[in-house]
Amino acid sequence: MNNSTEQQFFYLGFDLSTQQLKCIAINEQLSIVHTEFVKFDQELPKYGTTNGVYVNGDEVDSPVAMWLEALDLVLKKFKMNGFPLNQVQSISGSCHQHGSVYWSQEAESLLANLNNDQRQLVEQLGKAAFSRQNAPNWQDHSTSKQCKEMEGVVGGSYQMSRITGSKAHLRFTGPQILKIVEEEPETYHATSSISLISNFLSSLLCGKLIPLDEADVCGMNLYDISKRKFYQPLVDLVNEKNADSNDDITEKLLGNPVSCKEPKKLSNICQYFQDKYGFNANCSIFPFTGDNLATICSLPLQKDDILLSLGTSTTVLLVTDQYKPSPNYHLFIHPTIPNMYMAMICYSNGSLARESIRKELSNSNDWVDFNNALDDTNIDISDELGIYFPLGEIVPNAPSNTIKRVKFDPKTGNILQYLTRFDNVKHDVKNIVESQALSCRIRISRLLTPSKPSSTSNTEDNILLSFDADREVVLSEYFYGRPNRVFFVGGASQNDSIVKTFSEVLGARNGNYRLDIPNSCALGGCFKAIWSEKTLIDNNTPSFDQFLQETFNKDELHEVPSVQSEQWAQYSKKIVAMSQLEQQI
Ligand code: ADP
Ligand code: XUL
Image (cartoon, rainbow, N blue to C red; front, side, top):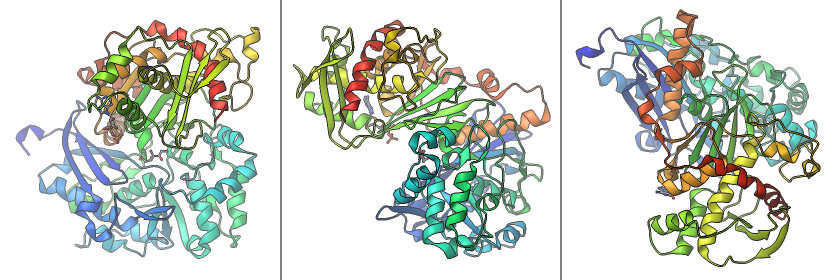
């Protein structure tokens, strides 16, 4: 390390993803000064994972011991490369969501007695600290029975989303825990506490068991988001399924989660890390959160801003103050901005579906012909709509190879005719991109601040749309919600024509931007760490979004050229047709 790092303060952000543990250090100017990572399959091959997990039919899990080794290894790399860990002021981070770690009765004392006696974490905690050696992973899909049981208790998918922010999902931690209660009663009984991956990692750094993070807890299907406490009928279900009446799930989850209303220091880093890697005794640990939640903390996102990831799949992350749950998406408590939520929509058909239309159009491996068709204003698709799901789709729920093309009446939105083909594949090019964007717009519109108040006087308003989970929505609620800004990331965000079409359909009021965020999860952790520490030292520190707005390097944002956001209104005509089309799936 050169002299310029002397006397500086640094902030660390971890990212424990499915395939690797990454750790990034930033300075006071929020610039990355050092990065280290450990790739599980390659660097810890003795665990024999593939892409970080074991797959056994529909069960997917990961060895917890591998993560212990990875934590020592990543910090060893910082030390070996001369990074001054003694100048780190604070640490936070993110972890893949929904996974769960099962601690044994001895865990608490083993954590409290961690010391630098030459033995690694894996040797000191080893098997003894865990009642289950593997942690279920978010890719697990073995809990259909438990999802049904849980939705049975609350009264169905919509009720489940209304209470917990999401309908019951196979990967969510509540169904995963319930499965262990039902199928591995001895394991459950031997478990003193259960962590998500996020508070598992913060517990290691603190040398004591840390409760859940209130943002990440929303990925469990157990937490009543509006009441900010565990939902008792679901807690009772887990307790009743468990033969040992002394075991209470809320006790195992260590009671109330750590609130996100204000920064909360968990503790200083524990002695083990001070002695072994030279951390300062005052280095603060702040709550870790889920990876998607950390991603929204990596940018200066404000209310009504969207982060749209156009990768292999499409993911929409939105900052909203509206708690209007739906089985179509997820709502989580925002990890750093009080009274805000993060909405998330996950689509499986994104780039791969566009690629399949590109192949139908021409043999070319680039996007030139596709983009020419997409930009061609002479191709009129104003009375057409198409949906293209080569892969099974999550939103709307559809089996693989669901492809539908229709002509509709633009005045009423009623479908007039189903087609097997349009006149030309160029129409498919325009329709696939437009309908993908329209689907995002419809799903998020009710979560955005309306640009006009919605009215119920119009007779049109009474039309029942297939996206109306709660049967209380009026058509006009889908018309006026416009995003503040849209930030595009992921592979296809490099494509001007695709990004321009999405921008026009979504109709952001204050611009569309493209950026590269390869380190978003770890950076979100760094930003949370620096802002939390500064807020504790000086309570005049601005709110999280304001702090990032002031300090974020704007050169990283590239405005999307020549978007006509006012075209937005014309796509409203397709909402009724889209609803009718989705009803036919
Ligand atoms: P992942 O989501 O798997 O992390 P990426 O974000 O890198 O991956 O996205 C990969 C996808 O991006 C590919 O399927 C590819 O079709 C798409 N992609 C990459 N470049 C372009 C481009 N210029 N135009 C359209 N799509 C692109
Ligand atoms: C979100 C989800 C994944 C994991 C792993 O619900 O399951 O995004 O967080 O990245």
